[in-house]
Amino acid sequence: MDKPRELLKPIKARWILLSVALALIVELLPLGGSTRFLPDFAALMVMYWSINQPSRFGIVLAFLVGIACDFTSASVIGQHALAYTFTTYLITLRQRQVVMYNLGQQALVVLALLLLNQAIMWITRVALGSAPVGLGYFTSPFVGALLWPLVTNILIIPQRRGRPG
Image (cartoon, rainbow, N blue to C red; front, top):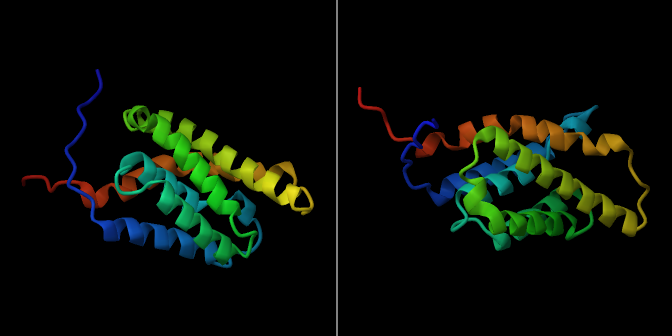
Protein backbone atom coordinates (compact mmCIF):
# COMPACT_ATOMS: atom_id res chain seq x y z
CA MET A 1 0.00 0.00 0.00
CA ASP A 2 1.29 3.45 -0.88
CA LYS A 3 2.12 5.81 1.94
CA PRO A 4 -0.16 8.85 2.15
CA ARG A 5 1.00 12.04 0.50
CA GLU A 6 2.03 14.79 2.90
CA LEU A 7 0.28 18.14 2.98
CA LEU A 8 2.52 20.86 1.64
CA LYS A 9 2.55 24.58 2.33
CA PRO A 10 1.81 26.89 -0.61
CA ILE A 11 4.92 27.73 -2.59
CA LYS A 12 6.11 31.30 -2.80
CA ALA A 13 6.71 32.77 -6.26
CA ARG A 14 10.17 33.92 -5.22
CA TRP A 15 11.23 30.29 -4.59
CA ILE A 16 10.19 29.41 -8.14
CA LEU A 17 12.10 32.40 -9.53
CA LEU A 18 15.15 31.67 -7.37
CA SER A 19 15.32 28.04 -8.49
CA VAL A 20 15.01 28.98 -12.16
CA ALA A 21 17.63 31.75 -11.75
CA LEU A 22 20.02 29.30 -10.07
CA ALA A 23 19.50 26.83 -12.92
CA LEU A 24 20.35 29.56 -15.44
CA ILE A 25 23.47 30.46 -13.44
CA VAL A 26 24.57 26.81 -13.39
CA GLU A 27 24.15 26.78 -17.18
CA LEU A 28 26.55 29.75 -17.36
CA LEU A 29 29.31 28.26 -15.20
CA PRO A 30 32.49 27.43 -17.12
CA LEU A 31 32.78 23.80 -16.07
CA GLY A 32 35.31 22.76 -18.68
CA GLY A 33 35.77 19.32 -20.26
CA SER A 34 32.86 16.96 -20.27
CA THR A 35 29.86 19.22 -19.70
CA ARG A 36 27.94 17.35 -22.38
CA PHE A 37 27.08 14.82 -19.67
CA LEU A 38 25.50 17.47 -17.45
CA PRO A 39 21.73 17.73 -17.75
CA ASP A 40 19.90 20.82 -18.87
CA PHE A 41 19.18 22.22 -15.40
CA ALA A 42 16.86 24.90 -16.75
CA ALA A 43 14.79 22.19 -18.46
CA LEU A 44 14.67 20.25 -15.19
CA MET A 45 13.34 23.35 -13.39
CA VAL A 46 10.77 23.98 -16.12
CA MET A 47 9.60 20.38 -15.89
CA TYR A 48 9.53 20.32 -12.10
CA TRP A 49 7.45 23.48 -11.79
CA SER A 50 5.19 22.52 -14.70
CA ILE A 51 4.43 19.20 -13.03
CA ASN A 52 4.12 20.42 -9.44
CA GLN A 53 2.80 23.97 -9.83
CA PRO A 54 0.92 24.09 -13.15
CA SER A 55 -1.22 27.04 -12.06
CA ARG A 56 1.89 29.12 -11.37
CA PHE A 57 4.26 27.86 -14.04
CA GLY A 58 2.93 27.23 -17.52
CA ILE A 59 3.74 27.53 -21.18
CA VAL A 60 4.40 31.29 -21.12
CA LEU A 61 6.97 31.03 -18.33
CA ALA A 62 8.55 28.00 -20.03
CA PHE A 63 8.88 30.13 -23.18
CA LEU A 64 10.50 32.98 -21.21
CA VAL A 65 12.95 30.61 -19.51
CA GLY A 66 13.75 29.18 -22.94
CA ILE A 67 14.45 32.64 -24.35
CA ALA A 68 16.70 33.36 -21.35
CA CYS A 69 18.57 30.10 -22.04
CA ASP A 70 18.94 31.06 -25.69
CA PHE A 71 20.53 34.36 -24.71
CA THR A 72 22.77 32.89 -22.03
CA SER A 73 24.00 30.02 -24.20
CA ALA A 74 24.40 32.16 -27.33
CA SER A 75 22.33 29.70 -29.31
CA VAL A 76 19.70 30.35 -31.95
CA ILE A 77 16.98 32.52 -30.43
CA GLY A 78 13.92 30.37 -29.93
CA GLN A 79 15.67 27.01 -29.88
CA HIS A 80 15.36 26.38 -26.14
CA ALA A 81 12.08 28.29 -26.06
CA LEU A 82 10.57 25.94 -28.64
CA ALA A 83 11.77 22.84 -26.81
CA TYR A 84 10.65 24.03 -23.37
CA THR A 85 7.29 25.24 -24.64
CA PHE A 86 6.55 21.98 -26.42
CA THR A 87 7.53 19.77 -23.49
CA THR A 88 5.58 21.97 -21.06
CA TYR A 89 2.56 21.62 -23.33
CA LEU A 90 2.94 17.84 -23.20
CA ILE A 91 3.24 17.98 -19.41
CA THR A 92 0.04 20.01 -19.13
CA LEU A 93 -1.81 17.33 -21.09
CA ARG A 94 -1.00 14.67 -18.47
CA GLN A 95 -0.03 16.72 -15.41
CA ARG A 96 -2.68 15.24 -13.14
CA GLN A 97 -1.40 11.76 -13.87
CA VAL A 98 2.31 12.56 -13.71
CA VAL A 99 2.06 14.34 -10.36
CA MET A 100 0.60 11.14 -8.85
CA TYR A 101 3.47 8.95 -10.09
CA ASN A 102 6.24 7.96 -7.71
CA LEU A 103 9.66 9.51 -8.29
CA GLY A 104 10.90 6.54 -10.32
CA GLN A 105 7.97 6.77 -12.72
CA GLN A 106 8.34 10.54 -12.90
CA ALA A 107 12.03 10.08 -13.72
CA LEU A 108 11.04 7.94 -16.72
CA VAL A 109 8.63 10.64 -17.91
CA VAL A 110 11.33 13.27 -17.40
CA LEU A 111 13.80 11.10 -19.35
CA ALA A 112 11.41 10.97 -22.30
CA LEU A 113 10.82 14.72 -22.14
CA LEU A 114 14.53 15.55 -21.83
CA LEU A 115 15.27 13.30 -24.83
CA LEU A 116 12.53 15.14 -26.73
CA ASN A 117 14.09 18.47 -25.69
CA GLN A 118 17.48 17.36 -27.01
CA ALA A 119 15.92 16.06 -30.23
CA ILE A 120 14.10 19.36 -30.85
CA MET A 121 17.30 21.34 -30.29
CA TRP A 122 19.30 18.94 -32.47
CA ILE A 123 16.76 19.19 -35.30
CA THR A 124 16.76 22.99 -35.01
CA ARG A 125 20.56 23.13 -35.23
CA VAL A 126 20.73 20.77 -38.20
CA ALA A 127 17.90 22.60 -39.98
CA LEU A 128 19.83 25.85 -39.63
CA GLY A 129 23.02 24.37 -41.03
CA SER A 130 25.06 23.46 -37.95
CA ALA A 131 27.16 20.34 -38.06
CA PRO A 132 25.35 17.35 -36.56
CA VAL A 133 26.61 16.26 -33.15
CA GLY A 134 27.34 12.72 -32.06
CA LEU A 135 25.25 10.41 -29.94
CA GLY A 136 27.02 11.73 -26.85
CA TYR A 137 24.69 14.72 -27.17
CA PHE A 138 21.86 12.47 -26.01
CA THR A 139 23.54 11.21 -22.82
CA SER A 140 22.68 14.21 -20.64
CA PRO A 141 18.94 13.36 -20.45
CA PHE A 142 19.84 10.08 -18.74
CA VAL A 143 21.85 11.99 -16.11
CA GLY A 144 18.93 14.40 -15.71
CA ALA A 145 16.53 11.50 -15.13
CA LEU A 146 18.90 10.04 -12.54
CA LEU A 147 19.03 13.42 -10.77
CA TRP A 148 15.23 13.88 -10.85
CA PRO A 149 14.56 12.40 -7.38
CA LEU A 150 17.29 14.59 -5.86
CA VAL A 151 16.00 17.72 -7.62
CA THR A 152 12.46 16.96 -6.47
CA ASN A 153 13.49 16.40 -2.86
CA ILE A 154 15.50 19.63 -2.79
CA LEU A 155 12.79 21.78 -4.37
CA ILE A 156 10.07 20.49 -2.06
CA ILE A 157 11.94 21.47 1.14
CA PRO A 158 10.38 24.97 1.48
CA GLN A 159 6.90 23.47 1.17
CA ARG A 160 7.27 20.89 3.91
CA ARG A 161 5.47 21.63 7.12
CA GLY A 162 7.49 21.63 10.32
CA ARG A 163 7.20 18.44 12.33
CA PRO A 164 5.80 18.78 15.85
CA GLY A 165 8.59 18.10 18.19
